[in-house]
Length: 439
Image (cartoon, rainbow, N blue to C red; front, side):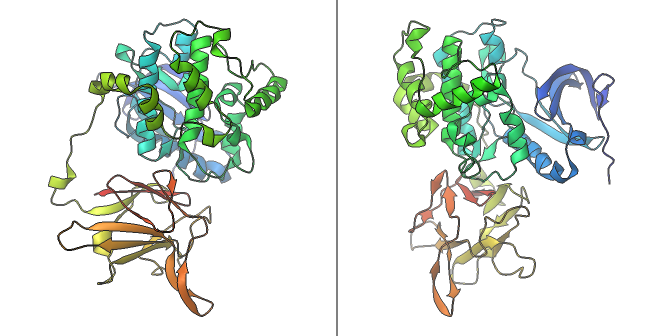
């Protein structure tokens, strides 16, 4: 077992094959960021201060750290790219793309200048859109986490507390650490401070609220719900947030584009149902023409799995206790009945489900959680229907019984009829997120 030792940044000269040039930041949660060089290229290396964390909490914090790495594997010009991860003196690290021109905070403080704020907003939204398409909620969007790359392209970073859509965050200490930071409090929606809601569903609307606050600050130089300089200010800020008592943009600036008024007003609404429900909705209403203008900047992986004879339809765990584990559903199909059952993996009954999902620290996945049905109609391609619950016997009677906590597909709760899956769909059961695709 590898020894866990303290890492002294002042004397740190290398991490594996990376030569350490300088320290970039020591202010991010439990992670420090240093500038590393390897083979003539520069990298931002984030190393987790695992030695500071209580032994009982290290597993969950490490899992969250690697979640950040996986989020950085999503391909987008508006997300800081992850390259590789490892361990140094027992402390996990990962190497990321180095973005040289500071953050949006530096722009706000006048250290660097950007051009069109509309273009900035659209590119940030496209980064969030790509995260959400892959089932990830950033959950800590703020100016410090928007870096400025070459050609003034914003790149989202620091997914260290990002949660997967509709996953329940059950650990309070990490979130508590973040909430103590005044800057983060300014951008977090009111549901994150509600003990009855904060550990329930992760939604895209969390990031949409934060985006509205950040854009308001970028345009005006102020937080929408007042200054935050003391603990007393925090209480007042939260109260004004819940009541939606904010100063109009016109108090600070001459609003030359009325779109900002509606965008801010809907994004920072304390009622979730009143906000834009998705990035797609916000863009389609206000930025459809601008989206077309920046579309050529999008970078896509031109890898077609359809032409890969070895690729098979399956479910891959993106977030959970067995990340990257893949279930090839055609191989698992149960005889000729075309059914696969999904549920909690019980080591005492390992064959209870065709797809048994491990969750060690929670009990949100039911033993009989879901059913996947193969539909192969004559002349039509094979389709897979996902349904909540299973047909089983309870109290000596057979019937259809739903799961306790339900299923979500692409941030929408599955209804009683179920839904046919499409390639790329994100499926969430309890704290586990799976992606339906070719593997």
